Length: 187
Length: 150
Image (cartoon, rainbow over all chains, first blue to last red; front, side, top):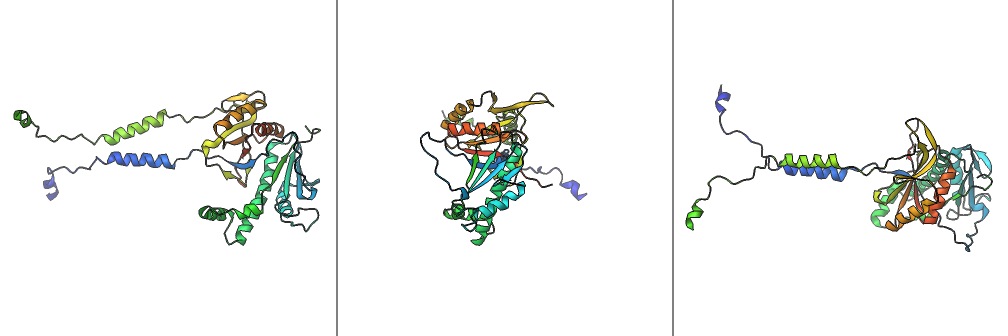
């Protein structure tokens, strides 16, 4: 009964003047945090257009790891048939050879990986091989970063971005991937 | 003169603020409904391949897309492989050069994202790449999905 008596007093009101600000805050929060469909992919830089009278720089045969992906998606590694998942190991061996094996590269910064396809090669197979080559580089960078005391390459990159230092790992093992033109006979 | 001042109203002169949030919400909803994210209708099928060694492109405004894939004829059937830039199919691949060169002039740090169907043949991709080299748009990106191991 005591509760009933209390009725009729001033009605409790929620202050509504700040509601607009709350709505604005919400709006701004969503504006800032929304990102629409971020594109992911494998980044590459194409070689610049060749000048007519300039000869391409000579490259020693041993420094190039030749990968050919044929019409049916089969992989030839240095003219030997192999599976796509062998590419990663071969690339690592090739880049980190440091002149030991005569068949592989002289030094990591001289090593070059050449991917050649036929015109009929399915895009999927090409991306698969390209991905393996990039993964080889990522794994090499990871182990380099671990040697420097970081947990992986990503944390190394984050650390040097704060310091503004040079990316020594990428300078040491520079990714050199060339996309060769298919042979005229194949096209 | 003084008589006029006496007329001052005794009631509080306040704008009612209770409906302000509703007005803001109405604005918000109006813009949400009317905004059309500039989206191109892709006339070719692009089932993207999957890859592991992928990076994100954060600067979306630098990116320009090129779609390569079999043309969608209707819901089921697909035709021959075509190249699409912006809203139009490119009939002649050599036109890619002029289109991309113009884009490069507008945005010197242009990244070209190639959204290629996984079943397309490399021939078309290589032709487009050759045109990109001629145009000078050298930063490219093979658009892929994150590899999901089954």
